[in-house]
Length: 151
Ligand SMILES: CC(C)(COP(=O)(O)OP(=O)(O)OC[C@H]1O[C@@H](n2cnc3c(N)ncnc32)[C@H](O)[C@@H]1OP(=O)(O)O)[C@@H](O)C(=O)NCCC(=O)NCCS
Image (cartoon, rainbow, N blue to C red; front, side, top):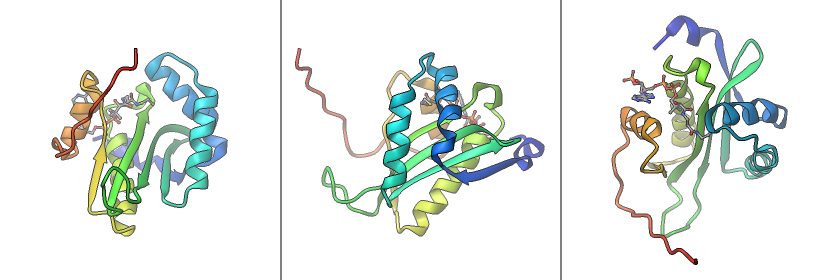
């Protein structure tokens, strides 16, 4: 945790003006520029009252973000469940407590919305994310992911 660094960071609600920064962070992480994917996703977050998007800014530039949603009844899951959709931190600023700060803010928002349980899905091979969520106190849940390949 780099507290001097974190003091210079401000958290803000996600906005369509953050699109370019998020595309760039995603590119730094995954190596692809997915402009229309993120444009749709940000629009979906902004148009859904139960969705929450938070960005972390340093010197007015977005360096990390987290997206989540409070579930209605779906997959047999009650409305008191919050889902973490995506989290991403610019690789230049990783390992300094930024994701933890974003996560705490989202958890606070979720609590205020009445969320009792938080779920997320992580690819089994995504070691960074698995380690991060483990450090944040996540454990394996009761649901399992089923898959049918159509070809
Ligand atoms: C996972 C990720 C969000 C972590 O961000 P970060 O800002 O470096 O995380 P933090 O510094 O806040 O770390 C919080 C805790 O998790 C731990 N942690 C984070 N990444 C870790 C890793 N790769 N291995 C082990 N522990 C890790 C930290 O040690 C810290 O533990 P502590 O609280 O006991 O000190 C970041 O690596 C990332 O963005 N990865 C890519 C995620 C992705 O694919 N997103 C989709 C595309 S945008």
